[in-house]
Length: 153
Image (cartoon, helix red, strand yellow):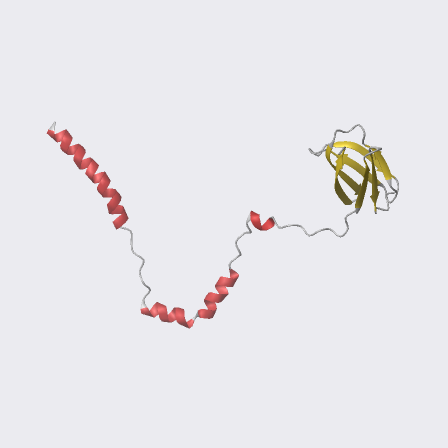
């Protein structure tokens, strides 16, 4: 019984001792020799060249989250609401065929109209829509524009 206890205690002691022995056996960082310091001092330009040749680290995702510059090519949208007749009058500065969509708060289109000439005003009947906030989006080719509007209030 004594041999089992002694063996276990030696085994545990060795395990605990190995962890500290390994930590103590790590080689310490050596200071460069004086000759190496002199060689490094005579070649500062070479180390600068090496530093410039290293590739730049990749950009972080957050650097790509910059705010986009406002587009000067966006369609200008003007919306007039008439609460008495429950109609929206939409004006755009698009010259060609234009699609006008009224989207609800979740982004689903509830009214869609296609115009042959986009610079004409279009009247939309919104009397069947529930009261709330809507987005009027106009698209003509690659150009688009939008405006938020309150209906029924």
